[in-house]
Length: 489
Image 1: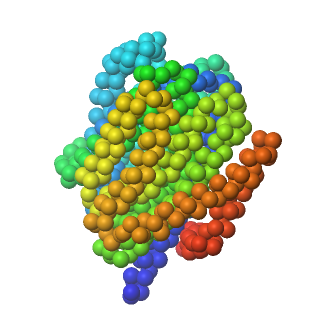
Image 2 (image 1 turned 90 degrees about the horizontal axis):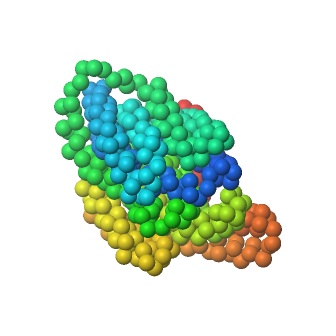
């Protein structure tokens, strides 16, 4: 490697390290802030029924947002030469699509409310759908920041929008607006984040509209569009499907469990997604390095994901009692199951990002659609068994999908099932042993706070010790990455 290549290599390492470090710190902070506001809202102002009223409609603006974005963000990231003309075409196309979609959802609101037996909530739904329209203003600007690895700026935007929207939502909840406060919080978050994306991005839209750049982008992004629709369906399928068959109270508990599980997943997936595609795309031509970087990211994801989500599953009962009080205790049962499947979902997220860097959006699309159809069929055919058996089967599906992804990517990089055992499955066993031991150490403790703290602390210490014994290289990598992120140029 000559001096110039080494300089480029070190620069990329620093960017990756900074992206992971600051992206990870930001995500932890975001989840912590959301966690605190969520506790206050749900302990004192929001009931299970209130959560259920909002949960059943979340899927509609999310599906619409997939049409609105049309895979443009991923398309722009994977396009080598991107100019102002490309961003401008995406901006105006997104705005036009979202305007049409909002009008359609506005008209459809009474029918959606009738389907879920909530005819009095038409105005609520129409207001909530405004978040879709506000979000369209940020798509091109978000792609600009993402393309240029501007992780710190994106982190500032998310944090500011999160804090301000939660404060406003809390004020409305305190004033007695109940489930309306949840809708207000969502709309305010989208408005603020869109405004800040515009502020931090150097791109400025012009009225000189030319949609011709979309032809090249859409060859790749059209498949991402279909995929993103199913991603949103997959992430919200429990409330959307089961909301027709179960009470608002049950759906509220289920949505609450899904929210906490998603918080845990988001700490990991958002941190990884901030860097993985831009970084892997930059080293696409160097296959050995490409595989090496991919495996490091996969190891890091597994190291964090399994102890975090298995740990949350282990302390689910005490976690819900401490944060939301006994009235939400049913949430703990659902949370425990979701966390097991969620840990493997973070691994599948890394595989899917890799396949996108290979330009195989059709494979990504096929996998996500297939997974969504399987989930839907499981929920429909197993609904008479109850919610929990269906959730267990779907968690098992996440595990099975990890092996399916491995079989697929073997066609594009040198990666074997033995590599999977070392990179992922080893952490499953280490995290499982640590959490299992911590549970037995703490289970006889009567005080819920002491029991919770003992379990968390014990599992963490045991996990580090076991990794130090069996996989010491991961700890060294994390220390090196942290040092790389903190060292100034």
